Amino acid sequence: MLRKFIIAIAVTFIALGSATAQNYPTKPIRFIVPFGPGGNTDIQARLIGRKLTSAMGQQVIVDNRPGAGGTIGVEMAAKAPPDGYTIVLASFGNILVGPSLYKKLPYDPAKDLDPVILLSEPAGLIVVHPSVPVNSFKELIDYAKANPGKLNYASSGNGTWNHLFAEQLKAIAGIRINHVPYKGAGPAMNDVVGGHVPVMFAPFPSARTHLTNGRLRALAVTGTKRSPLFPDVPTVAQAGLPAYSAASWFGILAPAGTPKAVIARLNREVNRAFAAPDIKAAYAAEGLEPAGGTPGDMAKSIREGMAKWGKLVRDLGLKL
Picture 1 (spheres, rainbow, N blue to C red):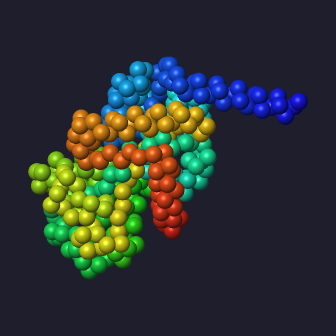
Picture 2: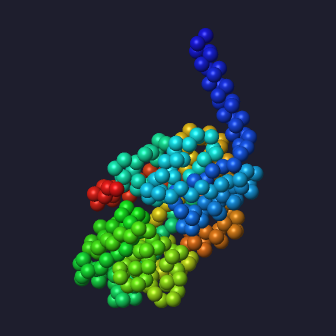
């Protein structure tokens, strides 16, 4: 009798979950962005949020919750009810790097969050101030080897993507350049443009204007293929270091236990949005390319990214 009762209860909950998923959504969805307005993370959330609002008949509300390298917003999502009404736009630092970088992270990306869809994997752009006597990536490596410890590079801060991209390059190329961390990409870029720090692994949008007006020089793209924004700039691999590639990471996650049918609906609508010409154009303007795919594809990218970048963080002995 007890076994039949337990089975009946389980069937009831499964039926209720299916009914909930079929009716989803019946109220607004909160889309947490763990950073302030205006950056790549926020821009993607608002583009996708508008498409989801139109497709799903309920408002998707972008909720900016910056702080602690993006971990505060992700923690909020991880602890939210798994009902499909809270999702988070997670990134390189708070998912792929966070578990290795922070002494005590208040969530486990593998256990506390479910993958929905991969949004983009943007590369960085290696730029130098014109005062640096190099005109190509190869010349930069040769100069760094001939002048060990002479060059400095700016980053958005310890453990950020551009810090780790540079450290990976140092390890593979066998060069010694000095890290100068800043509190964000904006201050770092200002000092590179001013010539105070000559090298940076820069985000495409903030570098574009300075490259156009000659205040900076682009040497290589960190990803596996050239950017349509800078088609004449080779990848690091094309420029002579085939073992190197580095890309950042953005994706949508939901609290662990969110109904699979709900995740499937969100995944389907975002993939559909990525096929729209206006989304493709908006992404391209930011130096981004929509990724898409299945939740399983995203889970795989998380595992691989955590393994790759976690090892580098541990090798460097970084802890925040």
